[in-house]
Structure formats: C-alpha cells, structure tokens
Amino acid sequence: MNEHSELPTDVITAIQANRKIEAIKLLREARGIGLREAKEAVEAYIKANPHLALNKRRESRSPMSPLILFVLVAAAAYLAYRLLI
Image (tube, rainbow, N blue to C red; front, side):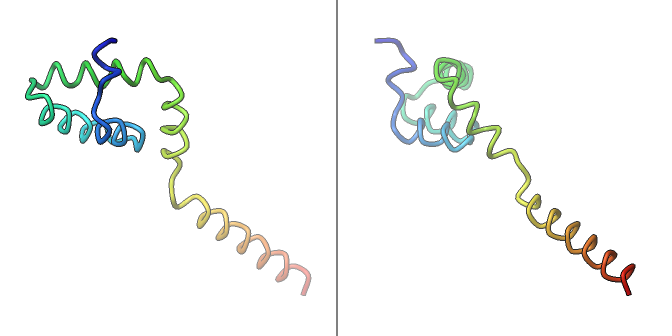
C-alpha cells in the first residue's frame, strides 16, 4: 500500500472540503513529519483522486452569484415596467 492511501480520516476530510493547508497541518501533527513531506503526501493524494478537482471547481463559485443574478433580473424587470408606463 502506498503512503498517501493511508492518510488519516481527518486529513482526507479536509482535502475533500478544499482545505489543503489544514490537511497538511493535520498530517504533520498525526505523523510528526516535516512540512515538505506532508505537502507532498497531500498533493499526491489529490493527484491520485482527480474527482476532488470537481469539488474545487464547484466550491470556487462565488456565494454572491445568486444575489447578483437576482439584482440583475430585478433591475431588468423594473426597467421593463418603467418603459411600459
């Protein structure tokens, strides 16, 4: 079994939540290893599990997007209403 498949559950959970720095810190604490080793192990896990990249893209969407869309639709509706009067 390779090194990155044996990551602790909390490290994997942090990776899946797109919290890479937290995952590295947790791995360092769990294994007592250096920063470089922990970073390489976390990155190797991410590389071996490309489906995690989909979660990253989904989470990178701004939480303000629905609000911005709502404001734009409301402004367009208001302008259409004012033009019809």
